[in-house]
Amino acid sequence: MTENKYPTEEFAKYMSAINTHDFSQITKLLHEKAVFCYSGQMKTDLEQVKVFHENFWNTVNESKWWATNVEIIHNDDKCQVYTYQYNYSGYMEGNFVEGNGRSTDVFVKNDQTGQWELLHEHSSSAILNHDD
Image (cartoon, rainbow, N blue to C red; front, side):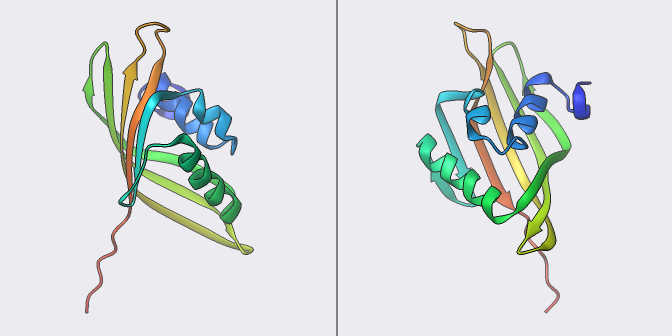
């Protein structure tokens, strides 16, 4: 196991980069053609992804992100696919908030550098069941 008890170093680096609140740290881990889907909104431009993260960091102050129930559903020498529950906590307008949802991440190995890069992330908010 790696730091933070994540299953791989690559996944731990990504979680750590999110918590820096510095998008340039995330960018270092991204594939040049990275695609993100957040709650049904597709983002293929890194500037859009940067704005999404920075808006969240500015809205939920002192936010911390972590993953639970991480499963590797595919792992070979060129591709790793993870599913997990993402969790966050922080302060919004001075009040403590927390939330979670589901994500699937696909990392591919860059043949030239040997570095694992995030190619795709699909995240959605948790769905609450209500008894009506």
